[in-house]
Amino acid sequence: MKKALGIALQLLAVVVWVQFLATQLYDPQLEAAGLVIWRVLDPLMVLGVLVAVFVAFDRKRRHDSSAATGMTRDYFEANVTLYGGMALLHALLWNWIGFQFSDPATTHPWLWTLIDISLPLLLVPTGRRLIVGS
Image 1 (cartoon, rainbow, N blue to C red):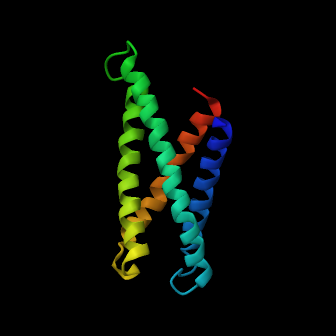
Image 2: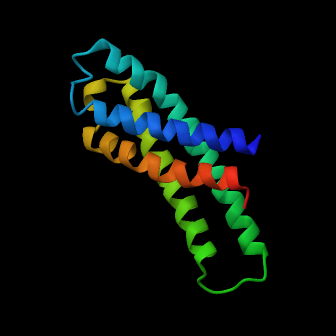
């Protein structure tokens, strides 16, 4: 199950990355298909980030309960993944809910760009961790 979830996270990261690059070639506001693709991807992105935060929380909890002390690589990776994922989840929910339930023109395009760039950086290592199983 973890392996399938890890593969799904990595596939989602690639799809978001490709769609982000594709939007540099066309304007999703003018193309109806572009908005439909993002409307499908947005809830999947939220689910992916939630899974990544859960995996990072579990990793941090296991590290904090171990006997390891000090600033180790595992400690650093666990904290960066957890808190970075939480910040990304907050930004994603803020912009997505604002886009869905209020005027889409009031969302921040620069925040969407930051989200679309950061999401693959979070999901690919998390998916790899789930596949490898360490």
